[in-house]
Image 1 (cartoon, rainbow, N blue to C red):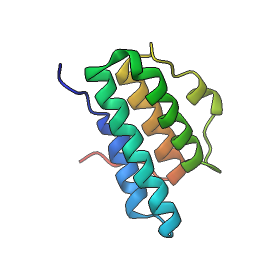
Image 2 (image 1 turned 45 degrees about the vertical axis):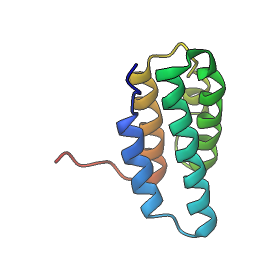
Image 3 (image 1 turned 135 degrees about the horizontal axis):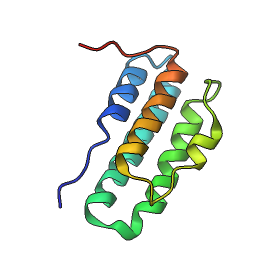
Length: 106
């Protein structure tokens, strides 16, 4: 099965990584990307592990978006049964919101 990519989430996270204020923040973003990749691979290869990997991604987003204007219930509402497209949209919205910027269409 083809491994899905959370493209919107990755775009927001890459933007935030480029604007990380210090090395500690940069390392937290690297850990986020590792968790995200593990989740994407689980969706494509090991559906039984999706829940655990999604928990890691949710925890990382919650940590990285601290102080942002996101509703913590949005993260809590993401479960292993949530469609990947909805997870991608929710995570990217939280990450862009915490960056206090909105992506511009090309």
